[in-house]
Image (cartoon, rainbow, N blue to C red; front, side, top):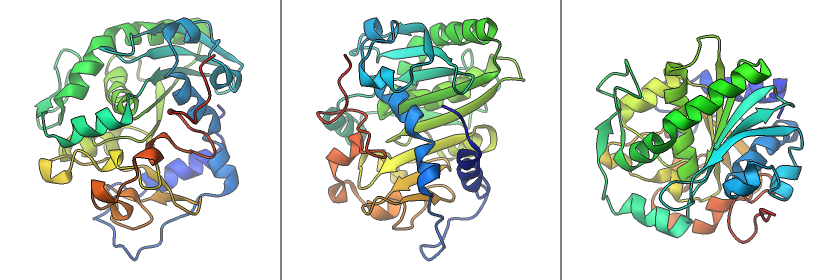
Length: 305
């Protein structure tokens, strides 16, 4: 994927307001143009490919999900789709980037896990996340899962940066995979050269951490999280439990328009928090897409082979 000027403007428009107060529901919400929306396509296919088994992604033979990014060269892949989500790392010639992608999970099970409150906020492991303030706390289940693959993925990214002579890393994922990619986006810069640049574009992201975590992400990452219509996953875990989204939301509305939502947990009805005030107003099927006509998971998604 080429990170075009259009996409740079979209990401910039979101990041400019990260330090702003909670936005008013009456504020103007920028709408993305069709050309700006199109810039997300290749990343969406990278995210969809993460649902395919390591046997297919390591050979880049995962059907149309792979065919849409034909210049991709895999470096490593792993996971079992059960205890450890599928993941892969490789080099995308089109964007001159090392790509890191994580698989999501079954929507109905994931929603249940996120709403039954059987989790805690915990500080980040100081070995994996040296120098991060103890005030930064994240979902313990997400942290445990990310830790399972962290050092293996780091080694693959280091290998790719060296082999292909690039300094760019693109992280993506959907659902649980989005949460893992966001944690990788905090983790990897702590262990890679300062010259490395990172872009994180994820889909259907649940809330991952507390206010201090959201503020850290705003200050240090280049994040875009895309939500489809009335997807209930991005509004859980609830803010009443201490969870907060970072800035960077792009919301797909029912009429097909895409809104660039300023600030954290924007309450506008053009953004996910205002459009889905509680999970009972959500539509589970929206979690899989479409994201510009692409379904990332579920029966409507492209097959893996």
